[in-house]
Amino acid sequence: MITQDNLASLLDKIGFSMSKNVYSKRYTSGASIEVDFNKKKITYLPLDKDFTEGKFPTKEKQSKGFVVHRETTLNFNANESFVCLICVHFYRDPLLLLRWRYKK
Image 1 (cartoon, helix red, strand yellow):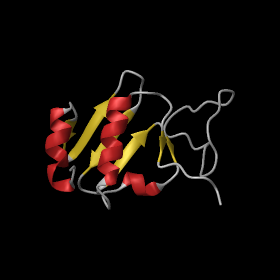
Image 2: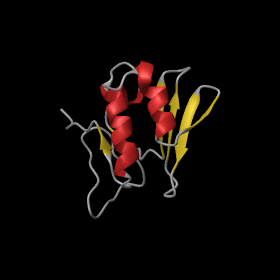
Image 3: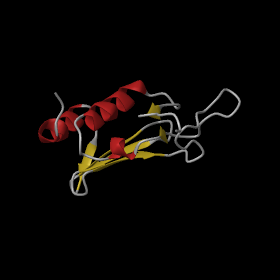
Image 4: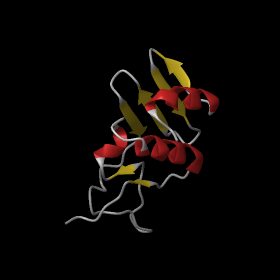
């Protein structure tokens, strides 16, 4: 199980660099992920703000970055955030919906 206690070690093993307790990874696509242990926050860049809750990319209107429907994916409150992080790292697709949900 991935937890806050073993996350840093895992990030080291999969090629993230660390500076001032912030782990980061830059990808050839221009995307990046930062994991800030000081603020307990995960940042995915670029974010595509065109697709808020209930809105999804289509073939005609494609995403220009990460689509995040739930902010819970971006913090350390649940171990599933770390699972999402690792999945994003290995998925390497320009279109990825994190914790999507339909608008009520």
